[in-house]
Length: 312
Image (cartoon, rainbow, N blue to C red; front, top):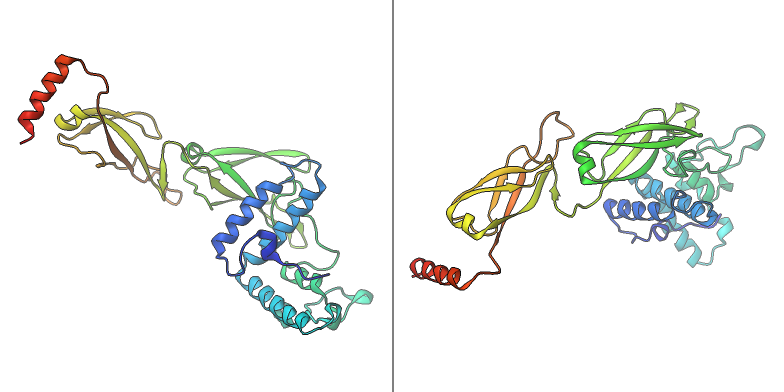
């Protein structure tokens, strides 16, 4: 098998950070997901390639081995070496061939090719590369030890606040998965025994959460930020206004003399904390002062008098 450029597959630079690789994978996984492209064999194959690339590049040790192999192969090729004669075996995990194929089918390390190296990096033994996440529309990535798989799942901020459920299907059987309140983008929800079967038993399914941006709230860790419109008279004199929260509207007091941009902190009105039951982040209300757009002549005259008495 010819050398595969996993960086090119994900569309990232060779010095890309782990976060950049993860973002690229999620974007491509959604683009080529079989559920999005039913019956499209090319998309299905591309999806497998994307998963394969991510599985290697997302693991620091596998990525290092892959980078070393690739650099040596390029140097060998540029020097005029025959691609079929390049010895990939010296880059295999553990420094050896690792026991590929026992018995009559046993191959020597000197005959190892790039496909064998990838099999080693992916923790597979013989029989070619299995499909990714079979029973979940092709989603996920196989782990080395237990055939765990990952599947990206998008949820709204409201779902992240209240918790959510998803109906998934495996081998023609539907099952419900609960996503706990407080998850963030990058959180992983483990579903035991819903991965792939391996010699060590059934692996687990991990839902990789992505919380979609919200039109009203901005989230920073477990805290939330939202704009609070306050009329200019309430801002000057003080009073009460109705503020939005994820749990519903709430009446809050606005101190007299509040200026635009001031933050009003509501403790424990933010997102639920995933790691601490019954604990919440805070909600920050950013005051945005509004002014009347239509006033009559009498109102204008009164306001001018007030302005003259206040502005000196």
